[in-house]
Image 1 (spheres, rainbow over the protein chains, first blue to last red):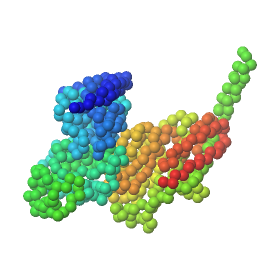
Image 2 (cartoon, rainbow over the protein chains, first blue to last red):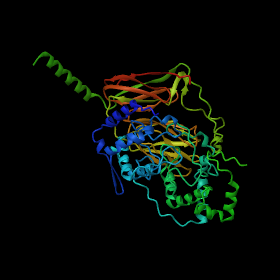
Image 3 (spheres, rainbow over the protein chains, first blue to last red):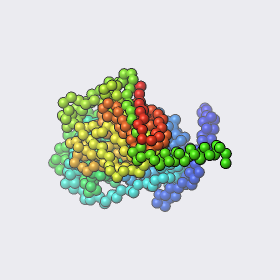
Image 4 (cartoon, rainbow over the protein chains, first blue to last red):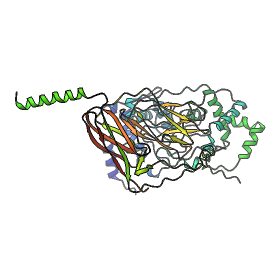
Length: 287
Length: 236
């Protein structure tokens, strides 16, 4: 028989009523396409679904937090990973809405597809009440992503040159397994050890499954982690070449890029040399 | 009008004229920053993972968390006026922060709120500049060799640790100041803050490992007041 923890329910209710009580906090709204979210509706949802990890005060110290590898987002600091806005700027409402719906791959943040779009919009509005930054700053201007150019072998090869020149391999490793020379010493902004993304895992990147998601990751950086923004040093057309190349590192994912790459002699040689058991942690031991 | 009022009026007039007569040079607060006890031994940095930087050193450089000098002095201590003076507008020149030999030069860069900082990469390897503020916004930018300087600024006073994720031994600090009365001690630990109008000030010294200390000082004219700071060295 399940014991009902009355104390916890009582605390939950008191906190839901008491926090946050900043004047105007409950008038915060969010706008995502046709949805408008309201913070007072979001508050009820937050204290039902989110506070277990993200904490009563929204600073990521929920009761689950000590058991989580990547710590829950601290909404008071308002530094977010998956954005369409430049590094150091606030994400757009749409960014937060998308993250809620999709979750953050390879972390404990689930996709909240069980919630309706309206509920997620309300949650975004409430999350924005935790940090005073939302009152004094506007979100950054979303970066312009040019339409994806045609996929060619030249594009993939140029992307490979960029991977070398920009020294991505220092963290991600030459085969993209997340085992580069600097990988073992990386810490995130909470001083927690963190691994670089392992491209051989599957077709997902941290912030989604599409090529646009990969584009945004290195052109806006994953704020709060070692992954920087390359927006100042990579031109948009070069960025697409890099995206095409990065897809060929995901050799467990039969993407159009990988298929094209395997059809060339050079590509086939490189990829077949790498084919080992999928090693999720990036140890990449060859048999 | 009572005697008290007459005296008060007289005192106000005298003070006002004293302020008016004080020359533009103002007073100076100077002194030395030293430590007592035994500071931790700074380890040498192993740069073997970055050969292009390792080869620039005949002997490996030391970690710069605590830099000591002759006479138990402390280098890289930021000494500044933390109270008693209004904020200053940011100067138009940029403060420069250089990555060279896989280290930050200077180790502590002090500049004002809203002043431009220019970050330069003089190495043959890529660095990412990742300042870790708590009050200001956190950003993280890659800077490959041969790319233009990165221009940034901060709008809140704060001491901000700076790191490079690619090279974990690289560590520096930004000291974002509210006014123009600040300095960083060099070898020997001496400092001097000049051009202070008459008034009561709080002088603060900040060292990245030992924290900060403050002392009050009053300037009445163009004299030099001596303020010394002694930090308790930590063995770790």
